[in-house]
Image 1 (cartoon, rainbow, N blue to C red):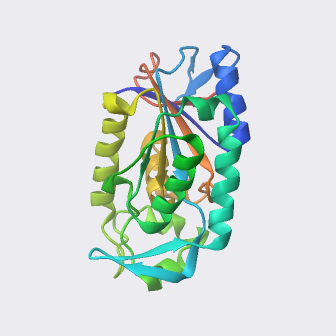
Image 2: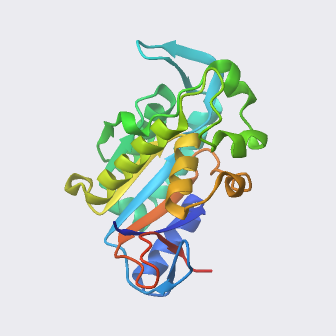
Amino acid sequence: MTELFSGEVGIMEAMKTMEAMEAMKVEFGCARCGAISKKQPRRILRFMRQAKADIFAKTVTADSVHRVLSSTGKAQARAAASDLADTKGGERIRMIVTSPTEGAVGTANIFGKQLGVPVIRNRHLMERDMGDEFREKLDKSLFEKIMRREYCPPGLSPLHEFEKETVSFLAECMMDPRLGTDTLLVTHTLRIMTLVKIIKGLDPKAMANWRPPCNCGMLIFGVGAKCKKCGCSMHELAA
């Protein structure tokens, strides 16, 4: 498998990081052993949490009930998209891939219009299935439980199936030539948490101390070569 580096950062901070990377001013370390790698990535994947959805506004589809963007969420997305468009990183993005849920598509379309790039939908970016009652109780106190495979209360889909789908999609993202060298992917909280768990090899207890990005916040990954020290395929920005 291929190497990844990552870092949870805001839009402008992320762009500064990428510019420094291009100038060979930053180092990357293995996400598991910390071994330093100076190799630069060949592909950038920017996983973004969708903008804020409206708790009251819903549209019903054949699959499920999806929340649309709130007025606050639309303003968030427009501001973040404008910031991104004003950077070199924004100029490099050639495609946006989004979860097909209403809020994610609304977020992606705002970014697509601002950046002038196509938006395509992929169901493997959808959120883990959960009922509205469980969704309303979802907060940091549940983060450890929700990352345990044996924890599957009514209304929450099995974690092992969600993880398997996430691993498969991540491999596709790293290898699919259609994505090009820089892609923005719009998704959701639990999908991002699962990506982090897989990439960094964290156990549920460690995930209890991890916090997902804010709405329109990004987690940036670079695709490159294996870690030579331990064979781990995932790297992050060195401290």
